[in-house]
Image 1 (cartoon, rainbow, N blue to C red):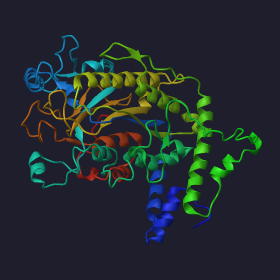
Image 2: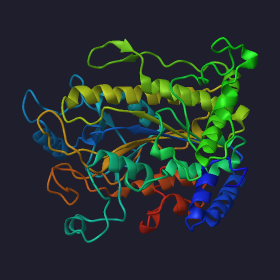
Image 3: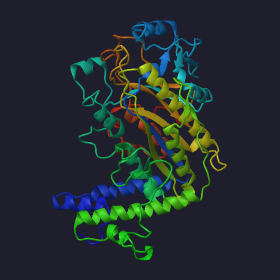
Image 4: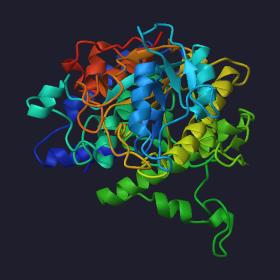
Amino acid sequence: MHPDISSRRHFLGKMLALAGGSTVPFTLNLAAMGNAAAAGATDYKAIVCLFLTGGNDHFNTLLATDSGSWNEYQRLRRTTDSGSIALPAAGAGGGVLPIVPNAPQAGRTFALHPSLRPLKELFDAGRVAVLANVGTLIQPTTLAQYKARSVATPPRLFSHNDQQAMWQSSQTEQTASAGWGGRLGDIMASANGNAAFTSISTAGNVLFLSGRTVRQYQLSGTSTPAINNLGGSLFGVTASANPLRQIVTADSADPFLKEHAAVTTRAINSQATLSGALAGIGAVADPLPYINPNTGVAGVNPLAVQLQTVARLIASRNALAIKRQVFYVSLGGFDTHDFQVRNQADLLARVAHAMAYFDGAMANLQGADLRKQVTLFTASDFGRTFTSNGDGTDHGWGSHHFIMGGAVKGKDIYGSMPVTGLGHDLDVGSGSLLPTTSVDQYGATLASWFGLSASQIADVFPNIGNFSIRNLGFMG
């Protein structure tokens, strides 16, 4: 083992070499791609993935409200008086919120869930767009092809773990090793003075931010806690003689112990660097209290706290010499097989509250308006069925999502809004939607805005070559 090995990439490269393989050609190619992309990264840009874990019911998030669509919606979702999952009409108490896209769709009107009023305001202001019926696809697929199994489709559809992995990496849980957020970080990391803070998660270790070379930095809450007792007295030993740091970072001839020490050393150094940068930025305003729409009780919205942490990290970009960052935040609970009306109302209210808070934070971050430089997008395991199981819905496929930011061409619905009902040419069963737009197209549009070239986008999104449209046009 070479004596100066200090990273997992080097270690794995050595192991592959022993097995008869080599990572050198790939590493050199990736470095060249990253340097080329980073050369043009003179400004700051960030992408924030907001993952709605569990599979959000998009049919109650964005609704078609023209008379034909609304009547069919009510017929299929008003199952019983006690178990109906249909929402009230616009104008009724707690009714849906009409929106008017810039590009009208003949004969159709639309509305958002009643809990999404802050998002409606952002949509009307032109800073939020909707992408309709997006989901995991290998290639464009028709219903006939899906039923005949004549083209490649994502494996293990309707499985939480596998479809989360497909959304985040274009591969299943069993085969995925790097997510497309991490692959973006791989290419753009050389633009950053401190690559350790290229990819950051506030929701634990996630596939989305796992890179081939770049490691994700994980934060919990709003602080950057250090290893306990690392610099103070320990078991009667004075601080000056405390041996803990030496023990946990000691070099070793054993490759696993060596790698463990390298990881620990990086963690210690990164924590010290980030703590110092955050200490110098001043305060970022706390989110206002969140009001639960079901109970009227005010409280703390954990999702808004995650986005406050992201805002603080963005505020420290100059101190850390950062030009490109990818973030991941998440909110769970969207697997609404039961109690959907109550639970989704609360969940979507949290989403709208947190997104509106983040928009405001970016509008005046240390006196600067960064909304054109920061883009947030939503994602989820999958959509859900149109039919109800009585009090909720089951796992689906395609779904509708939001994109927010000053660079977003907002107040529009992109993609193809499906027919409301059952038995149409996108219904794969129980109203579950066959996607008309792929996650690769969604991500490629964001990556193009981020500064990647066509060849770099093809490296990040392995299926993008199967689609004729590779930029969906929702970014300026």
